[in-house]
Length: 208
Image (tube, rainbow, N blue to C red; front, side, top):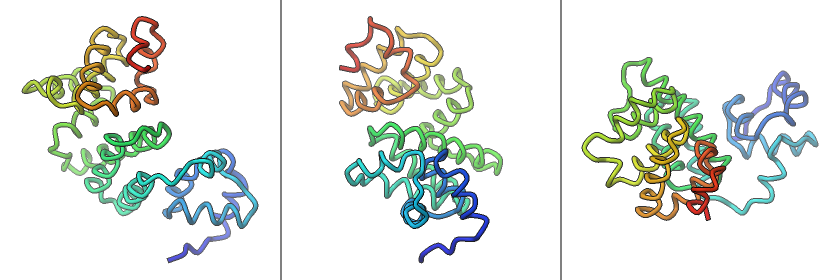
């Protein structure tokens, strides 16, 4: 069903569209990217990322992202977190991954408030990392040898080590995560959590 735009929403678009990403506008107006894009075209406006979105080939992950946003808007935090987590595991598209990580944090904060925080140990580890509780996140990644045999935990632990400046452990675990799943090389190349590791000439081969 097409969105019915209110006058104040149109006013907001005219004032702020160029400063916001399409997904951010979609979240604000509780609709999807297509509806926002159509309205922007109708008004002769562009969002911050309109040009880059047009240049990209169709990405199946965008559908998953929109399902996540829809569940987020409906307050279905656990369902939304599964969609965003799937994107983080599978996509190498940096902007989409960063937004998914941000919205995943929103889901986990609301799950925590409601006393129904996800029991999935990986989601819990992501939640603690997003909150800056790095020691707790690493403990969850290490429990039962998870980071040694599960590429998700290896990658997450590597990102935490990179954020905390422990580049030696970050490089070892990222190398393991890449060995377990080569797609992790692409993810890490675009992931801002690995900025310190990428800037280190000693570990540059991990991203080649």
